Length: 300
Ligand code: NAD
Image: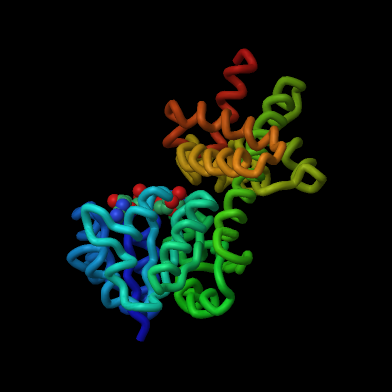
């Protein structure tokens, strides 16, 4: 039976680890926060004494950490022993955190240099997807390693796409979320313009959701209450996908735009808009709440 070390038992990591345990994997988890370890134990996850202790007996080491610096530090070690040194030779490292493409390539390079295998496998679908085991995985790395990780990915996810070599899972995630940030703002601007012109929310929705304006930001995450009863707008913009996370992901897009020199004006504008949004209460609200910023800026 495959043994999995699961490092980072936060909002996403705990339900993902719980799904692996439910699917029959032996899961040994660890988080720096003792209360989170305790909550994970209650969810049926065995807790190791340290991250290195969990990695030492694992066939697969999964990391679900806040940012790239955490992943690189956990791999390499420092104050605490690193995961790469602690693991047995040829362990499969699967990083599910959202980090920059170049950081993902550095992490994979470190793992391979230490005699291991590595995949980047960021997710979309949020905490609800993590709980239901329906996350979308975007995976970068060797095909054979992807095949080896597949049973574990299937236990946590729904749609799973192998995007290419190291870093390309993160590339797919950053490109997708750049589309999402730009389209959510576009949909919000269109609703505010429609309001000013006397167009009802429902009428605009009925037209655009069946026409060329159709997109997820409209048909699932509609930024006004009413047309889509499950969208966060109906629940005072409780996330959903918090503004802080969109700001983080667009910050990674900005880094990749700078690295490549691509002329991505709308992506950079969306990054600025969401950085501002997340510097206030929007950090904790759904990112579709940016419609209220647009209304305020429009003189309401
Ligand atoms: P979180 O902050 O709730 O969890 C991260 C956990 O990592 C924390 O509990 C922290 O204590 C732990 N940690 C940090 N360094 C550690 C170390 N060295 N060893 C052990 N534990 C360590 O974050 P989250 O919401 O679970 O997100 C995790 C990742 O998933 C992020 O990269 C995020 O961008 C991405 N993501 C989140 C969502 C979401 O809806 N929350 C959706 C998609 C992707």
